[in-house]
Amino acid sequence: MRYEIEVQDVFSAAHALRLLDGSMEPMHGHDWRVTVCLGADTLDAMETVTDFHPVHAALETVLAPWRNQCLNDKPPFLGAGDHPAESGLAINPSAERVAQAVAEGLAVALFEVAQPEAPRPRVLWARVTEAAGCAAVFRP
Image (tube, rainbow, N blue to C red; front, side, top):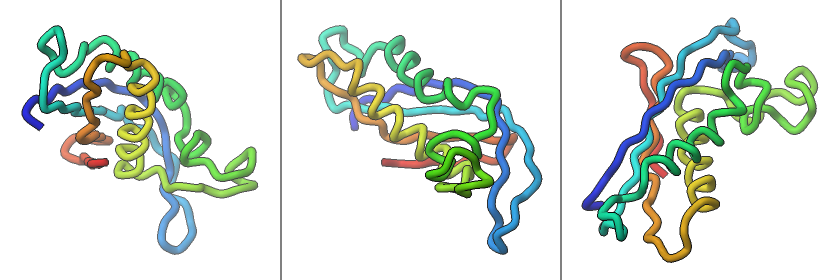
């Protein structure tokens, strides 16, 4: 990609990882810092990769269900049942999987708000930092 833009946001949420022995680590919270990068080979009619405002709005649709919640209780991390005790985790809410869910959710949200005639930027990566010096990146 010749051009890239980055958009950042922060959300607070708790999680507990399922460990290799099947037990759960203690529930704890983070201020998850999210950075997404979108890229395009050409610029649009405004000479931008895309307007930042729709990207912020699309990112908010991804993050809103997780704000001040327990990730273990929210899709895509929650299993098929109505409660984690009944169904278990479908996906362990690790920083890596949060980054993946952000990137994939953002791609869908951006597609829903895209102008049909405008070039569509691609989500190149999503980085999630759960603590200072601890970040995970997912590249679709």
